Length: 464
RNA sequence: GGCGACGUGGCCAAGAGGCUAAGGCAAGGGUCUGCAAAACCCUGAUCAUGGGUUCAAAUCCCAUCGUCGCCUCCA
Image (cartoon, rainbow, N blue to C red; front, side):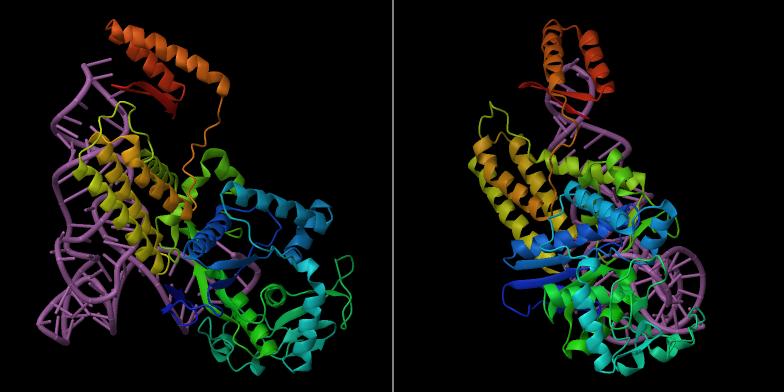
């Protein structure tokens, strides 16, 4: 397997610290507002990676955190006049529900900053003792000049950044690039006791502490959106490696940003579609299909048109799972052999693509080829038994990608009887060649979202 | 200003030195069908532009144009 590593900016051979085991940490959201589909994209990317690693036989310990204390949560809670912890709690629950909706496997652990305070403080203390951090008026800062490797992930040099006009000079810092490990609390803010007085952790330290706590000093994969490369991940490396003296993560994997009308979807730009809004109008599989259809490192274009294409593509995959007609005569041996061969080709192509830095688009292409093979065999008269192995493989591999392929329309079971009744009556109309009437029934049902498909076998229907 | 990514048929998009440039959507033609739908078959790109390296480039190098990201909170 090969994996692109942001640290080296190269595709590298994937080798775990411990054979057969993967320790993977992915940065989760800061819970101060409704999550948008950019968050979902990131979660989907790492879900796909995790599923594939498991398919390849790895045991994956997957940690995704929730940042449940920070300036914005506090601010938002004050605006709303609610308790900041309750606010975070609410968004965490909502997010977990969304993950389920998207068929994203639950992480092994979902740590939260507020529940790891001891470890965070211990780590900061250690950094202070080793001279990598200093305290000032109740704040504690990381001393970037002490870390000769600082900037290695993002490819920046301290000197270059120093001259950047965006950095506001804070008098209390020794160096403008120093960042907060601990922030002194202002009155009314949530605070924890620490050797430096009451305060709360900086953003970056929590991830370092949680990694240490839940995965150990060294991990295999550290993931997140590429907007986290700097400063968040850079700072995590600085903290963790300064503290342990060991290489922190072997592979840094970053997903590209979701783009809406040519711009990154973000809270600050305001061009966001919340997960809630998305799910109201689209099946969850559609977003996954979008993610699968392109490289995870590239920006992902999002629009109604592209989404509609993804939904059609899912239909296409589903077509491969349709059963053979009950009266199928059976296909010739040559057809059966060709299908068997197709199954092999598809699976090996699938693995080959995914092994190459999780090239899911390439893997999908293999599945579409398999679908065509199945449909061809069915058109050639294959029986259910003749199709079953190929269909099973199709199902298995789509599951590796996390696609459910289930029809997600609301089931109105009470409607079934009526539709079936109409179909029966229409059959008589057709038997009497009353085409106009029978077509009208079909058209009007279609307008209601019920699609009829006539075949020699009879008429079947499904929701649009 | 610094760092980085990207530009492949109408749309989404894979491919990263050499087999016929994947796949999906859309479009057109055909088979099947009473008609449709579904399915099946067939049809199209020389890879932003201009140089260069090489026996060979969409793939490497340089330049230009364009788009985007990071440098402040961000998945």
